[in-house]
Length: 217
Image (cartoon, rainbow, N blue to C red; front, side, top):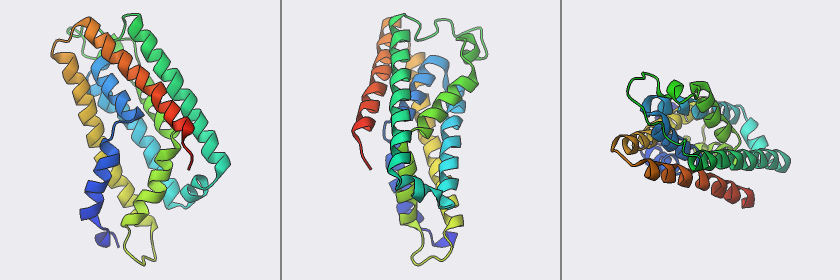
């Protein structure tokens, strides 16, 4: 039963992986810095769409199959390594060229459009980074079942509810990262400082891809 889920343990336990800086959180921070709070938060919906698909797969039993398949794990892993590397390189190149943060924020209601970046493109980036991270799938496969009622005969609905709760917690954390980026944008950082911060964010992505490349199950 859903009422028997160990919520008091689940919520603080879920906060740790949800709040830990990772590739998607760096994206939320960067998007908040470059495009503002609204576009950054809406872009994070792409990430949680990927997470929702993973939760459904886990509840359907597919998550365990994928997580225990060496071939599937490595295909997803290397796709994630490649995409993070490319995305990080693009971010660094943009910062080096001096295009990291739009200088004229006032006078436009849609900062993403003013920067020439489609909200769908930002959401797609979040989706692809999340979907190509096999650790996210393993997190849902291994982490969520720990909080199911003992000797539960029906796990599908509780897994879906736990997954939805984790996504809600993650959404709050994503909003915090996006808000931090937006705050850094609004406190009057110099153009050089903003470019350096954007470059550091870009450099962190290949670093994360390198870590992912060395990780096994």
